[in-house]
Image 1 (tube, rainbow, N blue to C red):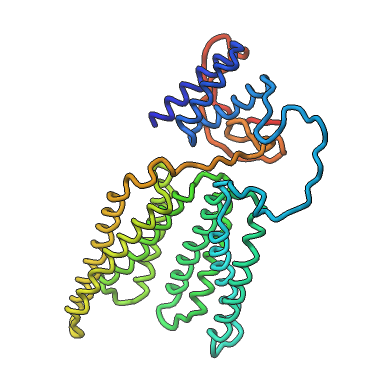
Image 2: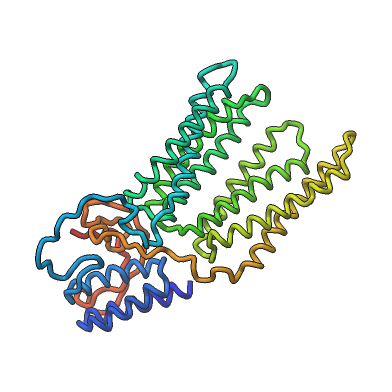
Length: 386
């Protein structure tokens, strides 16, 4: 909050210098505001001000020459692998391949399970494997051309995974008796598809880094496993309670991650260590379970479930503490900028020069001296660029 307040003050001063035609000084302050709070509302105002200043100074936008002296020769079309090989924002083909294979493999398994009523696995397994392999090998090339970043791809993929998890568990809840694998597969496919669409809408805003998504995945995994271990402690009359607990745990983990991720410094490498520490803490009590197992009592399961839940929380805490200085400062948004025609002035409702409309947020920005007789602030409701 302090960084955002400082950035807002810098933008106000930059606007005043811009009105006074001190363009270079205004540009310097706008850049400082952008660095101070790169994700806040002040950064959007600073970027728009920078674009206006550069236009008046005659500075070409990034990637475009100031003066086009001669038409460039048309280069032969080539694979996108060579188009931006050093771009840190470029999504890894491993990431896109794994998420593509998981989603389409799930759909293929669901469709294949309907081939034979007496043996759903006979169709689900081969169709799921074939669909997953085909998607995992083909779709990464297509996703490369979409210009999405690693964070955007991980946002959509993570949404699909946890939507499928919750949907499959909900399919188990549908019937207390006679639940089949087909019920779970249908629920997982519906949940994964719905979450995929929602994740795509969220990813378009490009607000989450790969580290943010890694934190969300870790918390959702802890919540899902925690639901199972709490179920062991409860020893419910119906086994569907395990599924309900895990749905609640996964949902709580995702929501917590969405809120906390932008406020924390997490990278995928750090979260692998945190998840590993949490997993060790959760698994250790099961070594004790073998020694205290008693078929005539539920006390051994209750004790193991309670110790596993506590061990997982303790392991996660230790993991966060031990890695608090790991990759410090690396959890930042990428350097890739949207095309100039997609730049939208900061406002509640904005129109880009390309004609696309989008929703923004309520922000405060200084009134230009040329429009108001005295200093003041305005809340832009509608903004547009043409």
